[in-house]
Length: 224
Image (tube, rainbow, N blue to C red):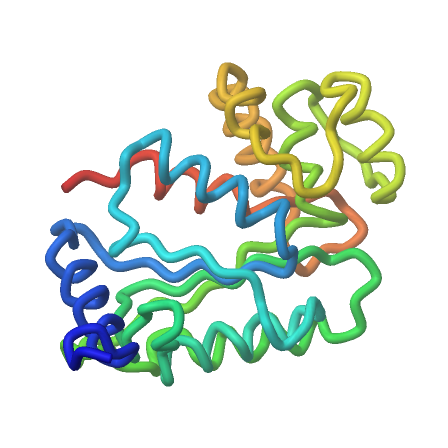
């Protein structure tokens, strides 16, 4: 095998090309509980707004779907990087851990750990790094439902899914065109989510809440 075709050399070249495509805005790492639903949604936004993949990295948790595992994997991926994914260590200014309240036992611990990490990590430019949770009560699909209904009272996750299917009959976990389907209602969903955030928070379970709106707003307003 020629030296310049060796795996280590190819990975180095891929990383250099990725760094060369980097835009001027912050580098953002998004780690999600779901292996398909949330990654597909945020990657779809990334493509729709032509954001640089070198700046916006979206990965599902590889430690597990429990909230504490999502936060731990986000920390691990930031601190150690992943050469197989061409992710360099400490190469982000902002980190977001995306997970649901559902019935997870480690939910409160995950929120506490993220709070501890926020502003404490340092990136490759020696800057303090934002580390935030993007939670939904009861689940991510509440954010999608807000595009069609004004939710004011607690809902169980099965009810959220049932009502969402009234508006998106073909919706299933892992759908890959959800942002396209819901995009025309983004403004009203944003307004409804903000109104919920004025009354409730990630800590007021079982009241409906979603911080997905904050991450969506960030991604849709990035500029080079």
